[in-house]
Amino acid sequence: MQLTERTQTAQSQWLLMSDIEIEGWWTSLSAKDYDNATIIALYRDHATAKDNLRLTIAGNFSNKTA
Image (cartoon, rainbow, N blue to C red; front, side, top):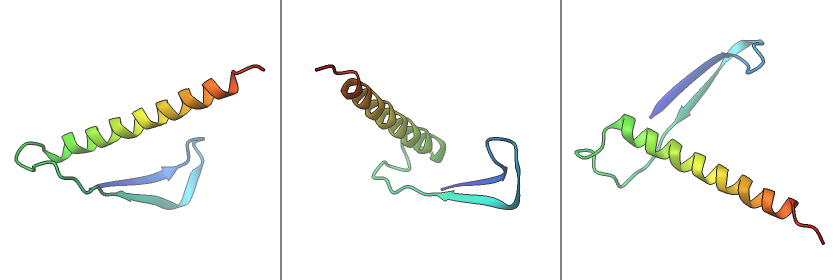
């Protein structure tokens, strides 16, 4: 699990109430082989790879000319 508290937006505007995000993952990875930090890093890399693939595919379709 990972907890993130934000008190400002990306544009540096202060929030009246904190934005709290809780992330959790289910995994079949063995706890004796992987610690929590490693599992979180693997999950982030997976999400980044999917985003990059999505952008690449979208870019390929938008650059097609008839």
